[in-house]
Image (cartoon, rainbow, N blue to C red; front, top):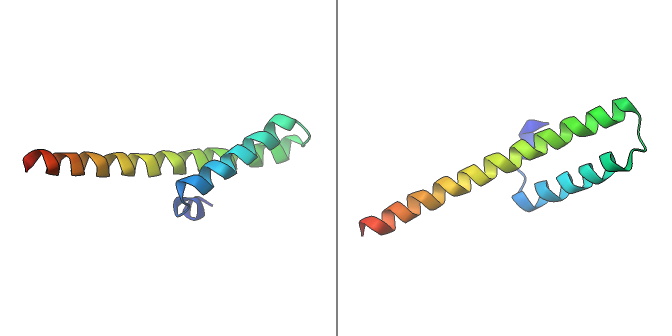
Length: 69
């Protein structure tokens, strides 16, 4: 599952995370289903974090380049 979410664009990952959270908040699932959704949500959250960290690194690199010019 992690490999699939790593290639998602941030917008799609956030959308899926929001949908997952809504399902969990509804409370209309078994414990097993809830745990599966929770795991998916955590994977999506980590994917978003990774995407944002990479974007931050790119911005820092570009800012450093501009500062040197």
